[in-house]
Length: 117
Image (tube, rainbow, N blue to C red; front, side, top):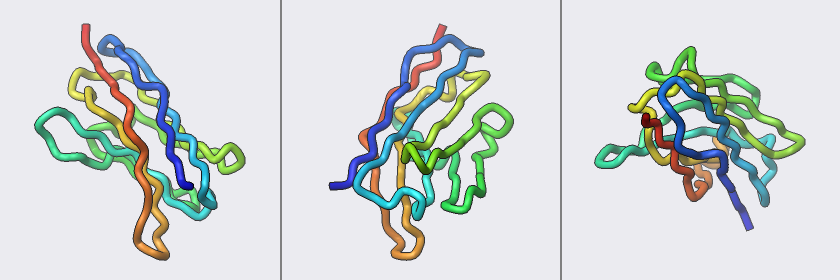
């Protein structure tokens, strides 16, 4: 059974930092591209950051320079370090594991990030 378990979401003040984690089980983690998406109330889910199985990273323009994505293939975990948080970063953050060879993947349940004073 495949599971993606996100953690680390919290309430933080503007300018603060959080680190989200996504722990995977039931998949050959190193084969998967790992992605973080977010969805704010009333908005569509959008891609925040992605790291391929080969370690190539991409970021949404809105988070470049503030967020850093990394992966640990031994721990089967991907991390999203979020610095200089802004109120507009408030959203539910979802982890996604995508296997490009078959064109499908899996989703986590989401973790809430709220940036507010």
